[in-house]
Amino acid sequence: MIIGRKLHKKPISALSLPFLLLFSLNFIYFYNCVNFYKDKGPEKCATISASKHIVVAHCKENLGWLDLLSSFDPLVCQHYHIHIYSACGMRVDLNSIIPAVSECTTLHRSRDHGSEEYAYFRYIEDMYDNLPPFVSFIQGGGITENPHLIYDIMVQDLPKLSYKSLSRHVRAAWHMFGTNNLTAKNKMGESKISETYFQYLNNQSDWVSDWRSMFTVSDFQIKRNPLEAYAKIVDMLASGECISVNCNMEPLLSSFFGCNPLFFQDKPSCTMGVYTNVSNAVIEEDYMKDSIKTSPYPPAWDTEWAICGGRTILYSMSMLNGALICLDNVEVNSAEINHQMNGDVKWKPDFSEVTWHVPSFHGNNR
View 1 (cartoon, one colour):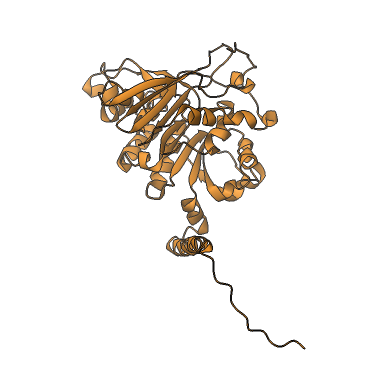
View 2 (cartoon, rainbow, N blue to C red; view 1 turned 30 degrees about the vertical axis):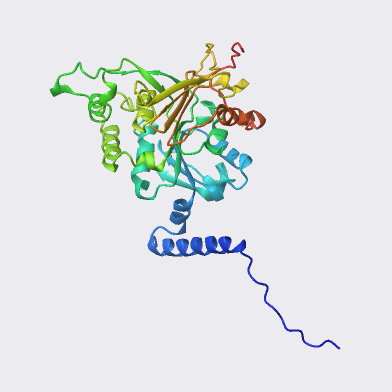
């Protein structure tokens, strides 16, 4: 005969309390968020709570490669939210094109003003008050411009990251259109943008910049520019006030977000040096990039660094494997840099469905 036993509740361990608290806070946040955004539904709250957004400027490119994000991180939809700004009137069926990440993707219809910068700044206008900690801005066909793109987006970023090039295409930039050779009556949009936001570059014949307009930037760095600045440039991109469709913003974006070696040089408090034999990995597909065409271009083997007032910049010049990274209030060593830059040699995307625009060209290896 079994006599009833007094039941004792198992005490909650101290280790489980933080998890219960986090769960409770997330539940309260999501409940309040859904009620606040009744007209936009729970998807609005899911995108706000993601730790990083991936913003895709799309026209007619095949977006199927975005599904490879899930092969790098099977829990991608728990950590990221994708915003596709699609122009050109293309029909985009997320469930059929990117089934693995469709549940964490929002499709936005965008006007076709001929540049990815328009889509990027429209996103910033839409999300300025609800930005995640980091945003990666990429082109719809970005993987043919940087075969390491998935890795560069999803690898754990260096501490205190404020800006990182996602194109691996870093070289000298210049004023494509004159800044001082037009009369005040006949100023073009490029000159107005330069005079308003980039006066410190007007006396420079060239400067270091990343190209192909793909980068990760922190919310803090985005908000160092007022919302009105993004709105003004969006208006100029849409109005046709500029000679170029992108108002010459491509070589200016890194400077706009505070990542330019000019900010780290010629000051008494700055120190500079070189990490020798530390650079981004190079694979066969790098020689098939859109920007390489059919000409060889030497890879970078070393990475320059500068530390100024607690801020750090890392950069190397190459169209193949260039780097441009800015960090706030942190110093890093060569081992940390080398680990991040070469980590993806052990993991490669499936390039079998990727259509390259140019034939493969193998350059000389060191």
